Length: 141
Image (cartoon, rainbow, N blue to C red; front, side, top):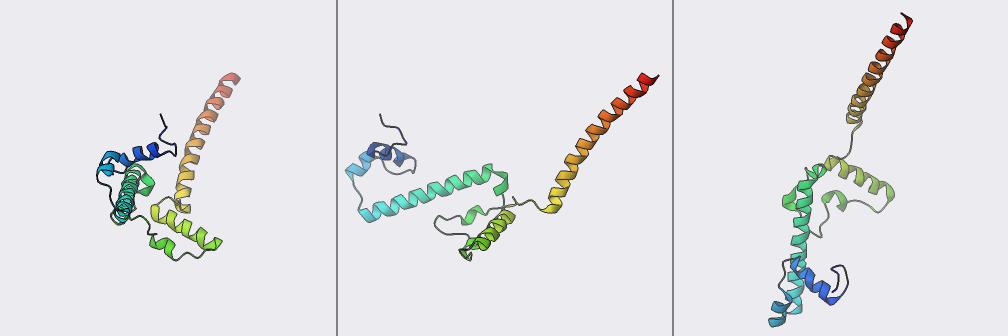
């Protein structure tokens, strides 16, 4: 039996179920024309891709600001439509995308994160030093 990841004909027939396409028997009984099949296949793959994206957006907290109503396959986001193919513009576009999705940590947010971690570490060190100071005083008595 062929594995689902094999590149055989039978493995590709099994993948029809993934995209909610007709079974091989249905296609054999009434074969569509090449143009109809191509349009149906592209539509099914696009719908499956958009459904997968929507699931990922629901699962991942960093993607909560993405508008799922205007998702479309094959169209780039307007953020990337004006990017020239040079290194600086690509880096700027990546930073803009991080800002739009909320995954870019600003310096003010970074300082609050660092200060909270630093405060907890200093508190632990203070408690540890206070305990050793008391032990040293008790040893002297």
